[in-house]
Image (tube, rainbow, N blue to C red; front, side, top):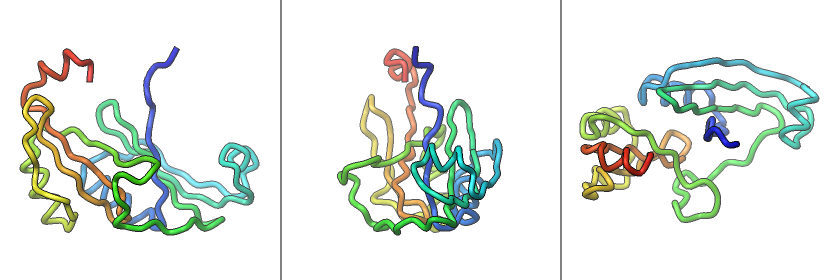
Length: 153
């Protein structure tokens, strides 16, 4: 039986910068952190060899986000303007209680957005922005949670 999705993970070339963004700017809390080097089990799980990695697990509510910096083997850089319709994970979404306050705070912190928050009626108010590595982060507010709760979201 599936209990739910435990976490999403992002590989970054600069863990300190990504951590600062997701912890200090977005507001997630550090749950745990660590590193490994030449750990045979991790190499088997990831399908890589001789890995040297630092990681941080962040949390808020029932959400977890894991950040990885692979010092070895080095990963390939991604296009920071990668279109959201490219195959693969397109974005992560963070539900907020005041989207306009969060949007203003993130813009002030230097986050670039595709547009200001857009009201989509019953679907909520949302916009897409980019983290420091170019990953798409949606911020979303449901002004009327009764509609959402009936959908079990």
